[in-house]
Image 1 (cartoon, one colour):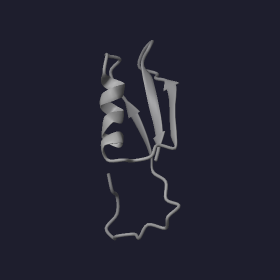
Image 2: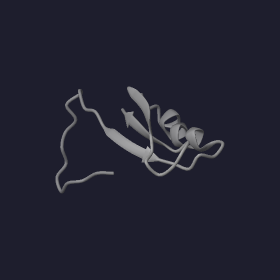
Image 3: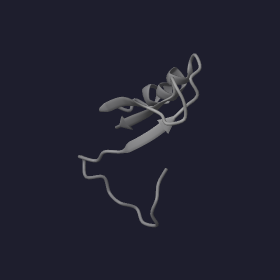
Image 4: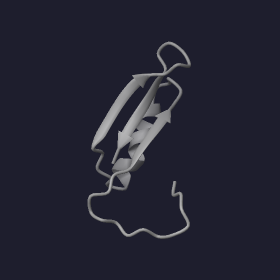
Length: 64
């Protein structure tokens, strides 16, 4: 996702943070992380927090 109407050159110290909520089903975490591996994106942080939507639902915070 890109928000803005101008190209901004990368400075070399850039970081992107996203928050993702998914269903608690087998394979969903793999489906989330596999594209990062495929495109050789280095994750610098992967953190989970309980979601407010229900028991055993989590929100993933990812920095790359």
